Amino acid sequence: MAKLLEIEEPVRGALAPPQWRAFLELGFRPLYLAGTLWAAVSLALWVFAPQALTGPLGGVAWHAHEMLWGFIATIAVGFLLTAGANWTGINPLHGKRLGALALLWVLARAGYLIPAGAGFWLGAASETLFFGWAAAALGRAIYSARSRRNYGIPLLVLGLGAANALYLLSARQGDYAVLLMRFDIGLLCMAVIALLVARRVIPFFATRAVAGLEIPMHTRSGQWQLGAGLLAIAFLLAGWLPAAGIALAATGALTCWQVLAWRPWAVRRVPLLWILYAGYAALGAGLLVAAAHAAGWVLRLAWPAHVIGVGGFSVLIIGMVTRTALGHLGRPLRTDRSMVAAYALVILAAALRLLALLPTAFAIGALHASTAAWILAFGLYLWRFFPMLIRPRIDQAAARVPVPRKTASNFHPLS
Image (tube, rainbow, N blue to C red; front, side, top):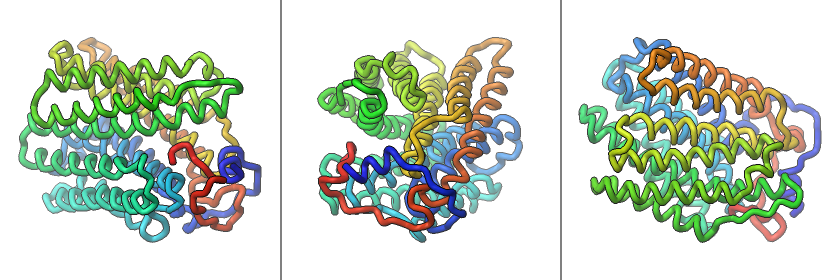
């Protein structure tokens, strides 16, 4: 357990100067920075400067795409590339190859903003390569190490990339109905990934942080949960909405039951935990809203996407990008005021965004207030973590320590 304890309970050390080698050491470093920065910039463009979105992928299609694949999926890829090193003892991407992956992401974001059609194809090609390369790198590490528990992860990332490519094709063809269906498939692929990861890490984090807390890992119910989520994706692909609604309801109900079984009241004094609990619960609620929409009970298309995306994914993300960054950067696992403020602002942004969906006179004001809270939240994260993410681990000074091969002494809960 020596290495695990070193990661999770670091010692203090001197602040080293910025270093390219450290910045490109693990996937979370460039991709957390890129994703959180783009979360703030893209929403500011969409709400306050929509006239700048003149490319072939424009309007609502651009906004939905950039929130799901430009922000949320980017953070997920950064987390998975980092977690993959713990699962397998093999760092999937680092150094120049990780830098090239990040460059593909930048080209995609820039391409969609170019008015000419060539920009769209540049963005589409770059982003397809981004997800394909990330899936291949994860697959190489996971399958080489025979980490059977994680064999599905590269396929889910590949599915996320495939849904993105199909979404872009629909946007180019102007087929709005197919566009919505493919967005929903991408949203559910991301939900399955989020459920799989969060269900593993939240109990582990909680039992380490709260003395005497014993909560279940939900291994059996997690298998049913993921099976129902995959069925929902299959039913959507087949166009069987009633069946998809049943599968979504089962997935959401299991998620809500799991978070209640984790004794949420016991973690109320630990911000690094309650933010993850809140995001997981909101994701479960969002899946239930999606089920209601599939059954025809919720008529507005925006409700499932925003409850799942803003209430679920984004709240989980702000918790994960702080908790995992602190651990992997060798920092104490404690929040400061800026981190807790960022948590509160993301939750506020989610609540106001849902309020803005209601047909009231306050809708526009709520949208602008939500956007301001969102930008401030991720601005606080960048202000706090940017100096850390571009430097070596605090307990390794300027030296780069290779990711060790997995042994019994460095067991990780996701292995």
